[in-house]
Image (cartoon, rainbow, N blue to C red; front, side):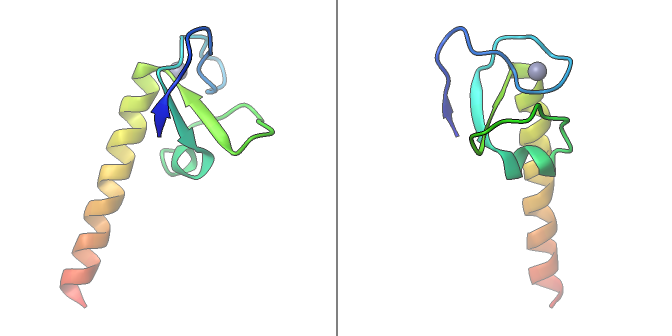
Length: 71
Ligand SMILES: [Zn+2]
């Protein structure tokens, strides 16, 4: 994840806000975002969609922790 240059738009379909973060497409998939096809394995998200991704990844990590504590 990194910062994004100005003028880059969010890669989520139907969203034309300015991107603030770049993600791996796998992370975007975890958040179930509908991403525009991209040749690079990178996805750009605006602040709103970044929040959704962050939340989804956090949940993912918590589930992992839970699995480890059970087994
Ligand atoms: Zn967006």
